[in-house]
Image (cartoon, rainbow, N blue to C red):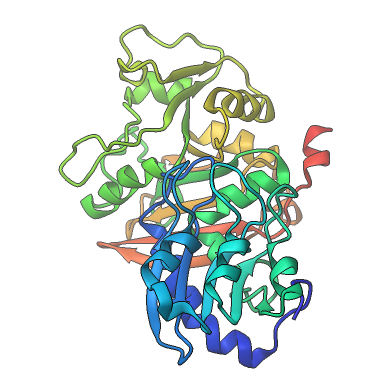
Length: 366
């Protein structure tokens, strides 16, 4: 089957569990493979038994398919490989994965999403032309909006490849009635310790983290990624403060490692382009942490690609809203989102959402 055809339902159902496993295999490498995509792979033998898994190594290392095939050895012959991204068909720091698959004598290749990079794409067509059974779009959501695997570490790379801009995730914590602080300004802590640990660790998934000057002056955050014991993680995002007000010399966000950037602009698109330039190749993911006016500016500009919401089982009745100034004057202008995942983190609810209507890049630039 060619890469342009949607596979039969029976094929999708057969390989869906293995695609889920491939996606989970990649989770542990979130943020460590830049500028390469974070991919997961599963190898099945000719009888359909799982014989190996693999995920992308840091830049210059092996791709997920190669890691899995190295582990599988001769057991891969006549079997199948299930991978979250179409196998590449070009030579960069490593050889083409499509060629390695052919060398190993596999019979079937299953992938979730086609490679949008014209330099690397074409692997599926090459494999199909060689006589392999090739199935793409395995793992697509029921409504066809996108692949389930794009909710994980592959999503930000895919977004960058498609739009030319990093994916912006707005993260916020709020009460049930949408308040990020009480009427007297207190906000520590709305959510429980498990949720706070969860969000501090997830900072390491991103290439940059952004807050406004108001949040910087009021809260003096460090914006570092930390583990459950409060120790800094090895991978740290570029710490960014957006706004025209000067950042105090002693602000914790400045740190001592030089990974600090003051974005002296109020325009979200200008800010994201500046971050992308500073982050360099592979800068694909930006975490927007606040405050509410900054979040509103990004929302109004159509620059929020993803939301991570931590909702506490508490009501405040008054206080600061988590979002202010989003350009909504009537219900018809509401920013609508699709709930992708929901889970409990301690006593708090954690939800991931994506916009129902994405603003094309050419409209953003206008």
